Image 1: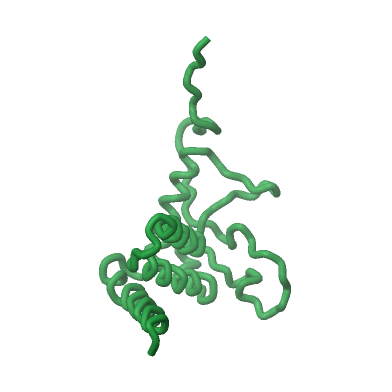
Image 2: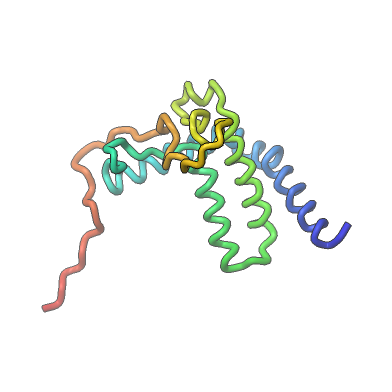
Length: 162
């Protein structure tokens, strides 16, 4: 086995252990954890910016797939600063596996919790269409109604010096 193969094998082995054992013990099933994270992120976004709408007027809501992909993006941003940090490579690989699970294996339990899946999206269909996946995929998670007036659409501006 070459050094390159050893690094790939080690990264995959560590990611597998993290996703299938270590993280499950610490945080529970990844999809269940991603449901909780999506609810928190949706609530944060709604409280911060009000209802976010797509160009067609439908609400934007993050789902488990979004959480997995955005978690990868966090790791990739960290790797741009420190590309030799092995744990970030391992975590990124684990998030990729979780994203695949969220996209390809929807579960009835998730549907009951209001979790969206990509089951009906182009990612999981057997057709060979090349249309891009939707920006979010089905039933949203979270998005409880906020109380009071909606937050401002942009941060407050500091007074200008005249």
